Image (tube, rainbow, N blue to C red; front, side):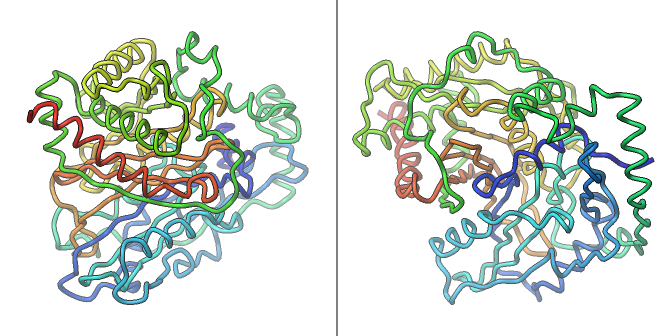
Length: 462
């Protein structure tokens, strides 16, 4: 029996264009390692852990004539050296150079003839630091059956005592013949013609509408009828985008968000969104955009929650961010109210059991959020804001301590900005990913987010 891509997974391949590659990414920055830390050490670690993410040794194979969704097959010529790469900045590399590298790497689509992931070990950073840039196709990571490799690479201590134990010799299974694939596809057409039609690119008149159906079916059905009945407000965030990207970051202490949560009886998600709202307000004003008391920016916000013990779930909310409200306190209360109302109207989507893993789970949750976003028309919201809490204890990669972790959420067609947020080890990290032409001031937005948080803090320190 072939391992066929689900209709939703296949849709990410079908919808991919040169301007909208369908992969998620991440930037991780590490303290100077005590010992050797190069691509050979990284490749050794990856090879030892690949048994835990078997999809990372498989590639996509199309069906002759497009009769059915593609299948996963073992990559008989799997070349780890192709996927684990080394690059370097001119010493001493600064953050601006690193961000430019991230933008360039994540602008390029993945090679579909190979397993759909890459990682780059970046050397040459100032103060002896090293970085890891990752990119993984959304068809590869569903958050349930298949997880992001970051969940299994990171350890809760500097020692890799289990490195030898985890690794095992891997022998690829021989892929099915073309005749076998064709025969199986014909059998499925006969047995389930309606399901096959929804899976085939050339048999769909409106792929976007079909993906929306599939996203609703697979994602737990987003019940937002009253909100999505209206198109998103007009915004400079919604323009025709190109292939090139920009990347920017900002970071703040998690204790600042906790203080605001406690003082205003909100939660961390509310404070994060209020910070984003204030940052967008200031950014729009600096651009000379009209901002009135009724101005809003509509965000799709997948929120990871724990409501069943160790079971992490995802709830998606479409929320109007009140960028027209001048008071930071009123903005926070409005966002908190909108989030509560949105969560009542949505259903949670089961993600992966994460509590028992020592690794770093947020990339998988960001991937799940991006998948939900891709299942909705870009006309329904202005931008995607993913927010996934991470561990509050240090994590290590091949003995090197993780210092910073920035998520990178993909852009949808017609959307110039995405914001990924992750908390880790006492800090909150914002990763801003934007179209290169539409967002030349992405760094300015990053500073606006920082200033918006300071503005909120000023209301309790006054």
